[in-house]
Length: 206
Image 1 (cartoon, rainbow, N blue to C red):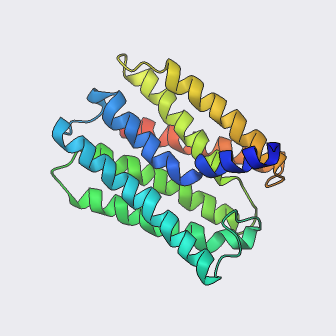
Image 2: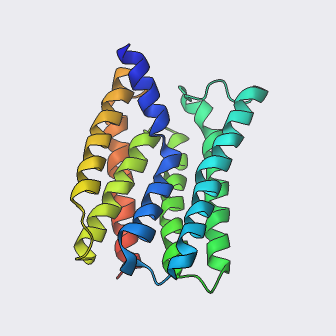
């Protein structure tokens, strides 16, 4: 029963969910973080969800059905490369699309570029070592929340911060319980995601 709960938990709070959570905070929790008109925020958010969550997820499921990926849980290092490369492509295309739309606030493409860089770094590390993608995403989310709380006084960071810390602990525990990662792989993923997003978003708002 506990194993099933841990498995479901890691599926629900998967790495592909993190860009949607970051942009949800940017667009709706801190209105002054972007100059984007209110009427466009929902459309941009749906675009982010579609291009960084739904389409990559459907593609990876398609790879599993075709036999190119052995398991959706990606237990082995070599199983991760193709899904990670595909995710990189979708994230970079999303960044480029936002960059091309000159009428949009640059924070959108720059934020997406930082997230894409964290995925690229994870993919490069995966060539040699199986660092946790779940914790890379959660570390990045925590970094963004802390930067926003530092720069935007109107941002009520208490609940997002507490929720992210609890989620990070629960997901890390689940990954370790499922024997999907060793402790160092979990800690390294969290730290790398945190540092990339902390410094990246600090640069954006410098």
